[in-house]
Length: 342
Image (tube, rainbow, N blue to C red; front, side, top):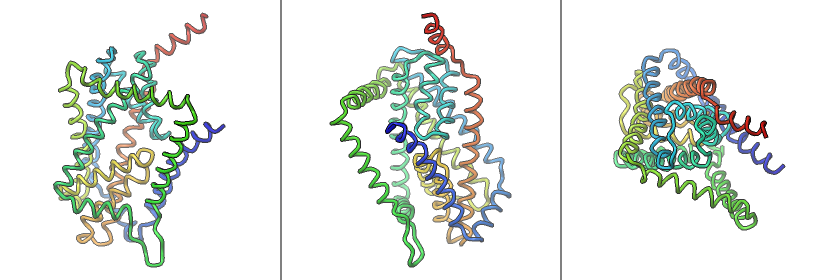
């Protein structure tokens, strides 16, 4: 019963946060900002949006190719197509159920290639470690270019300005409380539940095996190359969309990087960035274009964020559904037949 309630909370809470942010995103705009929002959506040059999707697709293909460099040292040779399809299924599931994409991806590769779930999952976690390193490099690069601006925008997101007499949403208290509650829960389970402790230790061992698997690879240079290529494609995908609007076509590079970081945080915060992504990108655009465009900058920024987020999300849904249909499930069937014979 407790496990069921926990699973429901893990699914529903991020969705509720995303829906709330979508409502807040729209309700916070005044009439002028809303009119600018609709105008931008209607008049945008969608050539740049479509072009950006090719870079998004390139990042997916590169990520699927990169995974082989983590699996081969563990003794598993897999088809590129199955790695790609399992990855897109993971993206699709993650849009529906928070944090379920990685297990779904590992499960899909197991059913198509018979790679043990724990090995694939460890490799996926290892990917996340290297992606976190790349994000850190982007943040450091941004700080070197415009650290003061990054801090100002970060403060405006964490402590947004509110009208006199009103109280802003206490984000820091909520996040801090959630972190403390999570830590207390972990400590209680660690000291009171031996089964949880053993599972966690084994999980950490699998992650370490996956992370250090790259050092056993015969081609670590190729792994690093694809890691860098993935993030270059991410940034180009994001930046090229700014050419879709005349107001943002000359956006500064420092602003593009800050917007990219803000959008990445939004994706991590809610299901696929629902609500959070356009809101955070809009804040960055408003910061840079507020003096030039006045009150309309908010609507322009949030419309652009919505265009970037919705185009990428729609692509992942379509490709994820295709992958879900075409991926082979031969090993799952073999195991089922074996059980039936027994």
